[in-house]
Image 1 (tube, rainbow, N blue to C red):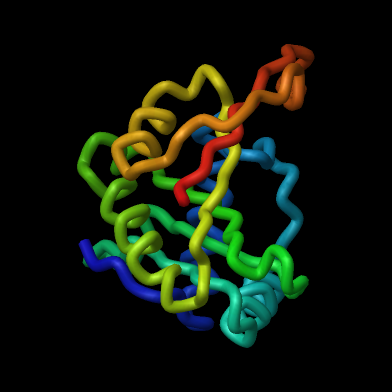
Image 2 (cartoon, rainbow, N blue to C red):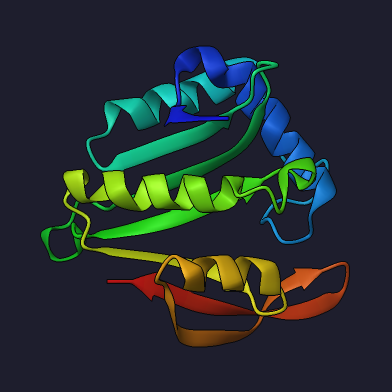
Length: 165
């Protein structure tokens, strides 16, 4: 497994990964079938991210040319919050419990300081114990909770805000 920066040539594999994550997990933001992207539009998103100085997008690249996961940190341009990076991570189910999520997170944390990020933050569903444990292992702490912030198939779920400073 290779952890590396995303490339425009990863557009189709990244779209496939996102579609798989949408289908496999209720813990990601998009529902199955909700993501309406083409390979070309995914390529534009990747190109836009690569053109930004405050975005880091890493992927877990398996030997069969599939992507098993990704981690993105993005910042805002305002001076008062330039040091804050918002983090999103996703790993396909077949790669859970293999250390890929931790390797992605660890690499992202290490490389994000070069972009000037001194604070990384994320949100996670409060019942996603596997992810919460991963984030705590990487040094994130719970800072707050949003009640009923997600509606999944008519059921409400809370989110935790976590950060690493």
